[in-house]
Length: 332
Ligand SMILES: NC(=O)c1ccc[n+]([C@@H]2O[C@H](COP(=O)([O-])OP(=O)(O)OC[C@H]3O[C@@H](n4cnc5c(N)ncnc54)[C@H](OP(=O)(O)O)[C@@H]3O)[C@@H](O)[C@H]2O)c1
Image 1 (cartoon, rainbow, N blue to C red):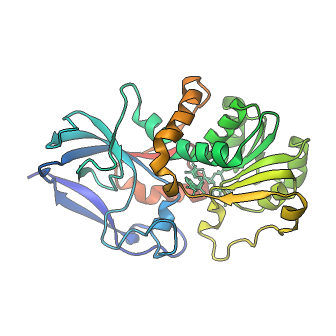
Image 2 (tube, rainbow, N blue to C red; image 1 turned 90 degrees about the vertical axis):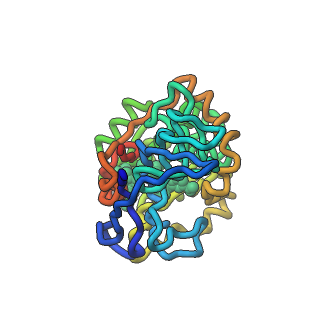
Image 3 (cartoon, rainbow, N blue to C red; image 1 turned 90 degrees about the horizontal axis):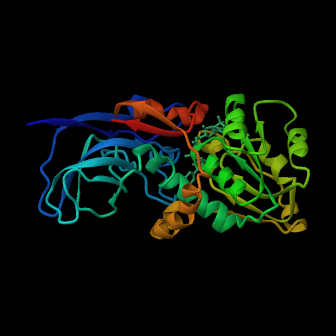
């Protein structure tokens, strides 16, 4: 009988680097699909910063943690290699929450077929969580208007790079905040952002002031970190702050306190946090909002692909060192 590998959570994450000690790498026999099920051979897995939260015993969050002993949770794409389900045939490419495993069975719930001509990288980098998050956060919450100024942090990341490009396509001035000169160069010269700030350089406030002569109307926050205060203090009256992520605080022993609230009153600023599990029932609507931009060639992306299931473990650390250049994927 053929066997396959899956990775189960052994210990909850607490502090520091993500290490192999947190996981059990287990070999198991490839299962037979039951009646009404398919067997999927996974080919591409998405890694996401949120996984760190799913690996803690925080039961207060928007989604329950992975239970100890369970296969680590993830979205992925695979090929149907055996089907006893009337809606799926052998050879179909499907996307769903397949987990950190080489093979998975599914009853079809939550499984979608990839359209012909759509690559696995495109599906996971744009047409799933990153693109849906950018649309929900920027278009539906941030409500950008042509001529306004948008500042997005984590701007070379999978969500931030799409947010900035949606902003440009809607006629905004777009400034991205990133952690390296290489990423600054990519968002300006490849993606067409109007400017970039490397937060690892001095005089962040002065750089921001120079790049936002009309101040800031929409702030799409992916990271937190010290530049948050500079951006917050440069918001225009009736500005909108969309809080998508705070990655600078995910591993911090002591999260940053954040800005003072008086400008919220003086400038009548709206701040809204959001979490995509609240909006995934609306995925077809969000995709239909995104597709015109994709079809018009407005959305470029880059995938950062790791090789082999085991690379997922250390791969998660790349989000926190900033070494991922684009959407982090694992090819199996
Ligand atoms: N609310 C939701 O439903 C939702 C959905 C998806 C994602 N998110 C959040 O959105 C954010 C971006 O996610 P993503 O998948 O697109 O990841 P990503 O931006 O592709 O990767 C994470 C990036 O965060 C940056 N970063 C790491 N530590 C940082 C620090 N201390 N200060 C500033 N930046 C830091 C790094 O870029 P640099 O090299 O530029 O520092 C790193 O490449 C994350 O916070 C994630 O949790 C939220």
